[in-house]
Length: 222
Image (tube, rainbow, N blue to C red):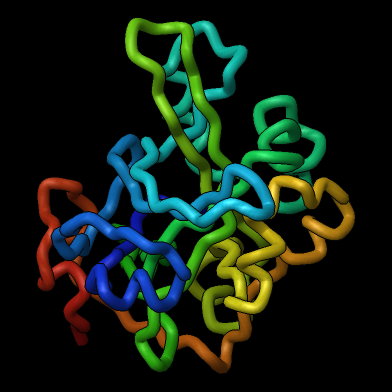
């Protein structure tokens, strides 16, 4: 699963990389955790401009009685996302780019699990394949999202069997186009990212706690 990630990229670079007109001032994030607001890009219609929004991480289906269900829907598996009642409607018409520039996974070993940090070799920001929903049964509507995961590539596999889907920039427009509703086409985009374009290294246990959100979370350890 994907349970923590980073977004340190400046607003100026976000505008350039993701073709959005406006990006509010955003502080660098080194340890984004579930239920927190996350930065996403979506498109209401194929001919409309992209918009950058903040969504709650943990998808709350529109039909849910209790928003706490979102705490269990942080990730959606690429292999079954088209079939699961919680995700299939969003897959058809409410897809988004969840902006990031690195993510963490934990390796099982004797004793506490070892966290590793993964990023692109050139340190560019990238987009996770995401789904979003609006829940309106409470006093205040909640817009939420989930990150789609897939089988791990050769770099991630020694640490964890799954990884978040990182979309190549050339498919951003297809992924967020609400008029593209062909399940087979959409699922064909949800494979593992190329391992040779990524790097990984172990980091400290500091990242285990969402109280810590600073550059020390991504510093390499021996």
